[in-house]
Length: 104
Image (cartoon, rainbow, N blue to C red; front, top):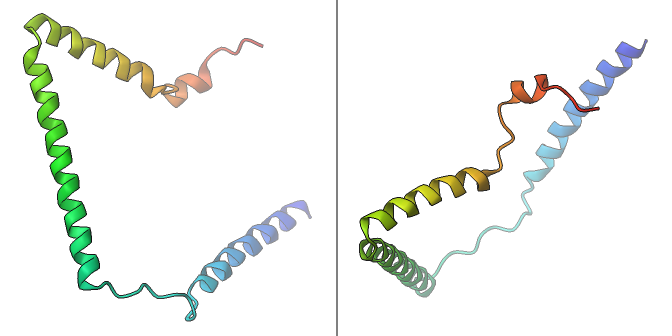
C-alpha cells in the first residue's frame, strides 16, 4: 500500500511540473521592446569603453609583474597558487568523505 502511494505521488509531481511549464508560455507576456538606433549606439559605446578598460587593466598588471625582480615573481607565483588552493574551499573527493571515520 505504501509503495503505491509513493509511486502515485511521484507521478502527480511529474505532471504538475509539466503543467507549470506550460503556463509559462503565455501569449500575453510582455514582448521585448524594439531597440532604437540611439540605444544601439549607446550599448556599442559602453561595450567599447568596457573593452578599453579591461585592456588597460591587463596592461597595468603585466607592467606590475615586469617591475618585479625574478625572485619576487617566483614568490608571487607560489603564493598565488597556494592562496587559490585555500580559497577554493573544496570539500574533497566524495568517496573519501563518505568513507572517512566519523568522530561521533
